[in-house]
Image 1: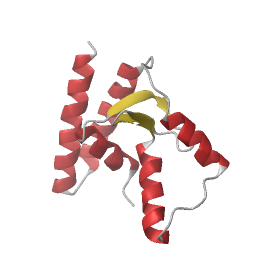
Image 2: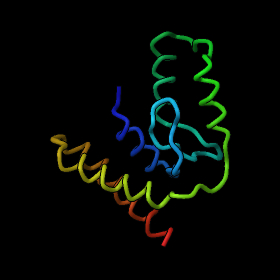
Image 3: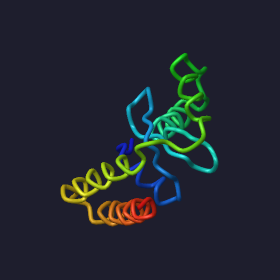
Amino acid sequence: MKQADEIMAQYLLKGGKMLAKTCPACGCPLFEFKGETLCVVCEEERRQKKDDDGEMKQPSGEDEKEEKHRKEKGAHPGVKEAIEETLVALCTRIRDEPDPERVKLLASALKKTAEACEMLD
């Protein structure tokens, strides 16, 4: 399973927007992607479970909460602060990452995140 920051970096590269709200299930930032708000980390875990099990399990109460959060729309206060925190996290991850390919992916995500931060100024 990919680490949360790798999943988020991939969604940033795909054009997803990191929001200031966090997922109630895992605590990761929510993303706006293709017109909907979702936790990309939980979504990836659901996909992995589906691939592992061959079918999707019945949603639990927690899954229903996540689904509600996925459907939320609109601007969120503190977006810039969340992006700045992500910049720091990506820098730390790049510094500690031994795999050059992952460094390249994370650096690209860092660039996109910095651009997003500049757009908010």
